[in-house]
Image (cartoon, rainbow, N blue to C red):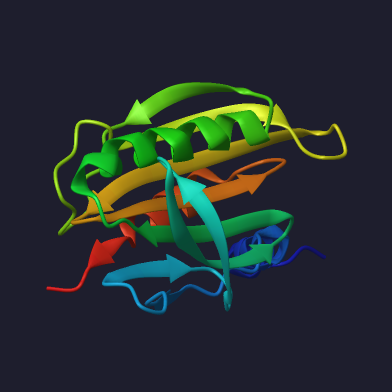
Amino acid sequence: MSLPRTLLGCALVLAGAACTPNLNWREIQPEGSELFAMFPCKPERFSRRLTLAGEAVEMRMSSCDVDGVTYAVAYASLQDPAKVNPALGELQAAAVRNLGGTATEAAVPAINGMTPNDLAKRIDVAGRGTDGSAVQEQAVFFVKGLRVYQASMVGPKLNAEAIETFVAGLRFAS
């Protein structure tokens, strides 16, 4: 005896849903930032001192992991407007260097409220993790005033729908 078509269809849909990553999207505002971002999990917050474009800054980050993929938003405030572009370039170079990979430019980001900047970009990086395994990164670099931002996803395999949800969820407070 076979199941009626509707029950079979429902069973297939439920079986497929059980195989999808457990992404529980929520909007958060990184502490001290005007940016809002969509995260698929509850992010933890970190900060550390570093040098960007020769200026000592505090880099703040919100990040979380789901199914082996790290979702992160980081930003730093600069004092000197002339250092914004060099700092953005350093963040982009570091993203590629950290994975020992190669980058291709995916698109110019269109984030509601960002400050227009010729170095704002979205890149795909193919490289290696610390254990030598293949990893992918999708990263977006942008500016708001004197703050430089990086939003990224890093993992062994990135889901196109999750990438678009994460990137589309980036916006600045009005």
